[in-house]
Length: 393
Ligand code: FAD
Image 1 (cartoon, rainbow, N blue to C red):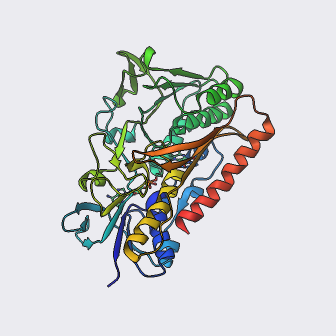
Image 2: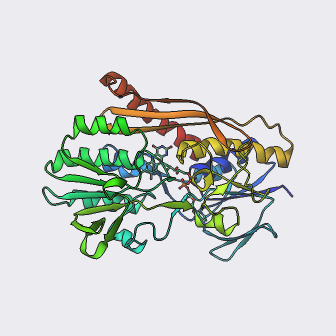
Image 3: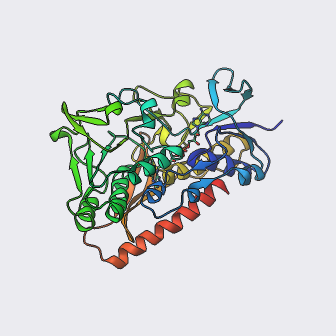
C-alpha cells in the first residue's frame, strides 16, 4: 500500500499541500483532505467585497480540481487525533489512519478575549474574520446603518491573522459609507499601540475619509473594552457608548484541532521546525498557516501557501525519497485604501535553527503617486487570480 498523508483543513495551507502532494508524487502517495465545507470563501479580498469592489461569489472556491488531481476529499470535520495510533477521528464517526498528518485549520477565537462577546454574540456583533455568512452579515449591517450612525471595530491583539486586515476593512467601510452614508462615523478600539502599515493607512484615511475615522489606542482605553450585544453598547474603560454596528475581532489561537493533536504550546499556537514546518512536538505531524508559530512570517494566505510547498517537498522526501531543497518562504500583503489606492508590505524568509527569519523586506511609501498606487492595486488583482489557482487548481 502507498504511504498515507491525511490533511486537515482545505484552506490556503491545507488545499495547497494536498494538491502539491498528489500532483508532484504522481500517485506514489495516498492523499486525503478533510474539509467540512463544500465551498471555501476566501478571507483575502473579503474586505473588497465589504467595500463594494467584488461580488461575494467571486470569493468562492471548490474542491473539484483537487479531487481531479487525485486527492480523496472527505466532506467532514476532524474531531480528534490519536498521535500514538496515528489516526484521525471524523465527526461523522470514521477513522482515518495516517503515516504523516498535516494540520492547517486556521484560527479559532480565544475565549474571553473581549468581555461580553461570545461566538453566539457573533450573530449580533459579527467578527467576519472567517469568511462566509459572517462577511455577508457585516455588510448587511453596514448597509442598514441609520444616517449619521456609528460603526465600531474592536481590533484584535497580536498575533492574529492578516495584520493589515482590520485596517483595510476600516478603509473599505469608510469608502462604502462615503458613498451611501457620508455623515456616519467609524470608531476603532485597539489594544495595540501600533499596527501594520499604520503610516500608510493614516495618510490614506486623512486624504480620502477626513473626519470620519477615530482610532483609540491602548492609552485611551482601547485595551479595556467590553461589549453588550443585547443593548448594542460598547464600554470603553467602563464608559458606555451606543453603536449601530459592532465588528468584534477577538484575540486568536490555532484552530482547536491543533491543540487536540497535542502540537500547540502555552501560546495557543503550534511551534514548527523552521526548515520544514514539521511540528516540534511530533515528527509525524506538520502544521501550516495561521495555526503555526511561524516566526517572522505574518499569518496570511500568501504565507500559508508558501509554507505548504515547503511542507509538501519535505513530506515527499521522507516518504518517497525525493530530493529536498533548502526551504525558502515569501509573503506579500496588499491592502486597498480607496479606489485604485493600493499599498503593500512583504518579505522573503529563510529558516534559522530558532525561527523562520525575515531576510529582505519592502513596504509602500507615504506620498507615492496615484499611478504607482494603481499599479500596486492591479498587482493585487493578479495575485488573487494566481494564488487561488495555485491553491485550488
Ligand atoms: P484557512 O484558510 O482558514 O483554512 C482553514 C480550513 O480548515 C477551513 O476551510 C476550515 O473549514 C478547516 N477546518 C478547521 N478545523 C477543521 C477540522 N477540525 N476538520 C476539518 N477542517 C477544519 N491573507 C493574504 O495573504 N492576503 C490578504 O489580502 C488577506 N486578507 C485577509 C483579510 C481578512 C479580512 C482576513 C480575515 C484574512 C485575510 N488574509 C489574507 C489571511 C488569510 O485568509 C489566512 O491567513 C489564511 O486563510 C490562512 O490559511 P490557513 O490554511 O491557515 O487557514
